[in-house]
Amino acid sequence: MQERVRELEQNYHKYLIKKRIKALFLGIFLCFMLLGSYFLFCFYQSQNELFTKALEEKKGLEQRLELARTEQEKNKISKEKLEKELEFLKENGEKKNEENKIQITSISLDTILLKKAFYENPSYEKAVLMSKMYYENKAYKKAIFWALKANEMDKSSQESWFLFARAKEALGESEQAQRVMELWKEYYGFLEEEE
Image 1 (cartoon, helix red, strand yellow):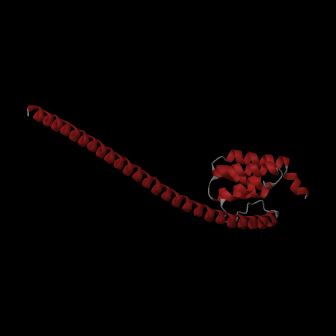
Image 2: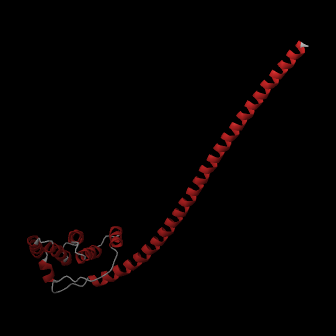
């Protein structure tokens, strides 16, 4: 009978060990399930954040694209307007002022577009116009720069020399302005008298 009791005790110990092992495996399985669920949730959350960011970026890009299209249309309209005004100025800009005075016209042109137009197709008229615009806005150093650009294209034209001299005077450099006018008279003044 003792053997039977021992056998039952051994079977009971084996049963307890199996039960503990099953509980351990079940615990490990549950841990893996929980960890897997956690990582799956984190992955889903990060994917959701990436998707949200991508949507926001897409909306931002679409808005910037729309703004760029609008800006392009504005620039196209401004360019067409500028070309018409430049043609008008070219036709009317060839008339010389007999009293040797600069005629400054008030034209609201975008200097950026005018610069672009100048660098695409340089001309004396555009450079003089830029110089006048900067002179009107009291940006005398820029007016000098564009007067020099115009002078490079047509040294004998009186208007660029006078713009240069006026801007120099406005900067308080009267001696230089006077010297420039003397140089112009010395080299080119006779051309106007002959015409």
